Each structure stands twice: as C-alpha cells, then as structure tokens.
Length: 457
Image 1 (cartoon, rainbow, N blue to C red):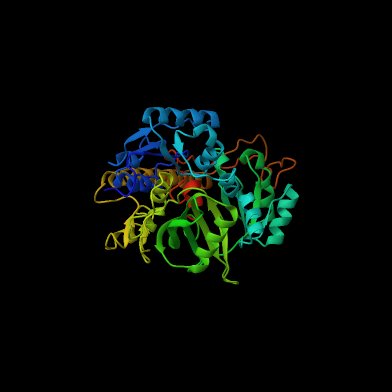
Image 2 (tube, helix red, strand yellow; image 1 turned 90 degrees about the horizontal axis):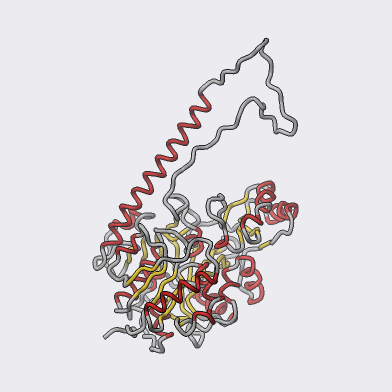
C-alpha cells in the first residue's frame, strides 16, 4: 500500500528553460515511485526529464515572459485535462511567486499550502529578505540598497571590497543581456556601472558584505512547514563540493546534523508563519562563527532528495501527504547520506557506495533513461562551449598578431586621438570577441543557471 494518496495527482511547474535542472527529476521520481501520477509543466524539449518512466504527461509551459494571466490559463487547461484536484509544486522561484499571486484563481483545482499573503514573494526578493532577517533577528550579511550610482560606489567602499552584488528579483532578469543574479564587485567603478543597469535588470540592486568561503562554511537547510507550522521532511546539509568552486550549486552535499542551522530555520519559519517547502542557504562567518542566511527559496532545492529518511519521507512527499490530509510518518534521519550531481562531480559519482548512503542526481537503476540522456546532452553542450572558446581565442590571437596595414599619402605620423577617449588611437579598432554558442536555457558550463545557483548555495 502506498504511503501517499495516489488518487491525487501532482503537477510540477518550472518556468525557467534549464534542461539540466535535476531537482525536477528528483520530484518526478519521488512522487512517481509512490504511485502518484506526475504531470510536468515545463520546457522539456531535449530535457532528460522527459525520459523518466515516472512522468505521466508533459505539458508545454507558456512562452518566455508570459504574464500571470497566461500562466493561469495554462495551469487551468492542465487542470481541466486532469479533471480532479491536484497538488501543485513550483520548482523555481518565478513559479513560486506566480503561484502565490494566483492562489485564488487556481483553487480549488489545485491543492496549495495556506501561505500568508505574498510571503513567498517577500522571502524570494533578496532586498526584502534583508529586512525580514533584521525583523526576526536572524544573522544576515550587511546589506545596502543604493538609490544612485554614487551611493552604490560609496557603499561598495564602506562594506569593504570585494562585495557581493545581487539583483533583488533575479527571476525578472532578461535573457541574453549578460546580467547575472549574483556577481562579485571588485571596484567602486564596477558598482557604479552595475547600478546604471537597474532598469534593464527589472529590480533593485543590493550590495552585500562578502563572507569568504572555506571548509565547513557552506550549509543549507531543506524542510516542509506543515499546516501546524512544524518543519518536517528535511534537515541541515553541508556543501562538500560546489560548481563553480566556492559558489554556485551543490555538486556534492552531505546530510550533517547541525543544531544551530536547524534552530535558525525553525525560528525563521515560525516567526513568519511560513507554510510549504523551503530551501535555505547559510554561510558561516570564519571570524564570528555565526551562520548567516544568504537565500530563502520558497520551493524545493535541487538536492532535496538528499533528505530522504528511513520512512522514505522527503519535502515533496511531505507536501503531498499534508495537503491530502494524510499523516506524515516518523522516520529517522540518515546522517552522512550524500547527494552527488554526476555532470558537475564525475569523480565523486564514480566512488562506490550503497543506495542507502548516497543518491545520484541523474542515474537510477529503476529509471536509467534520464541518466543516459543527460550524458548525451552534456557532451554536446561541453563540446559546443569548448569549440566556441577555441574560436574566440583564435580570433583574439589573429587580431593581436596580424599587422594592420594603413595606406598613407605622406610621411608616417602618429594616429590622431578622438576627444573623450581613454588613450586608444582612433585608427585602431577594438577587437570584437567571438560569439559563444550555447544550449538554450544554460548560460555556461562553469556557470549554472540562476535558479540552480539560488537553490543550492
């Protein structure tokens, strides 16, 4: 007999276009193995997720940049096809914020946690999160929200370079503009220039004190706050390896007891009255030893399957059980269990370990299709990136080595300077870097999507 009510299907919603989002596959397998029909509303063309035998049906999402009305229409169409109430699970911040705003339109076709107001949007907003932490006395890196370019430069200097720059609502960043949700700013001029792109980014810029990474400093907490406010189905984890190194997504994580992180997470959710799945990212300060909250993601983190206890409970199953009024089993934690993302940590994936002690993001003996599809897609992606970089290097070398021939009507003379330049002769054009091809939805091999980075810091 299944632990879950298999009469109630689940709908996974992902707005971003990343084909390598292993968190979606984890949710598909977690629910599908329990016998639940799993519908996926996401751009799954070419994605390994479509190869999973646990997917009941794939539904196309609304087009990029779609309005809330268009998203609501898509979800209502999916609900009409299912013809019975379903548990709706957003898998990225954009989806969580949208679902929070659309609650009244989506109920009763979808079952959702009773979240107070627009709380999901508040905690996902990086600027709002700083105010939330101050209100509930949870440590947070010193943060400044400048109102001018001059203030941005001054704040960067006062906080102490380098500083971390974040856009408060990263899900609004336009594609193809070279803007990233989080960057390291190393000069006051960089801070000034970044502020001037605020209108283009679609949200406020905030500058944050940089807490250096180091051994045993990066932690995360996953959980599900049920209807009573109790936090279930997760726990604290330690990031052993990240991609890129020192930041970015969790390539290897380990379930590690940490009473301080646990207490901070439970106090934060209790003070806010938060209900639903949460993914918190902490960094321990090497000087004070305090754990600072870096991000609050109101949805499952990509590595949530790390926290599968002895009763088989994880945050996704906890959500389904709670919303269908089923009791949550009292399983025991499994400390030292590891989660490995094979394409980012291939050597770690090769180490032999029992399934009880380790779970891979892509490969599973009972569902091998996504793992094979991922490696085919990843190899093509890496090949394209390497070829693009090689072409860029060749173009740069040709520009530097090849002499420039200039016809002259008289004796040689120095090229004239154009007023307002920074000392570059007007006769010498700047080299234009070659375009780098990429797989749609993925920014770079060494640069995971913003959604993955926010979910796994």
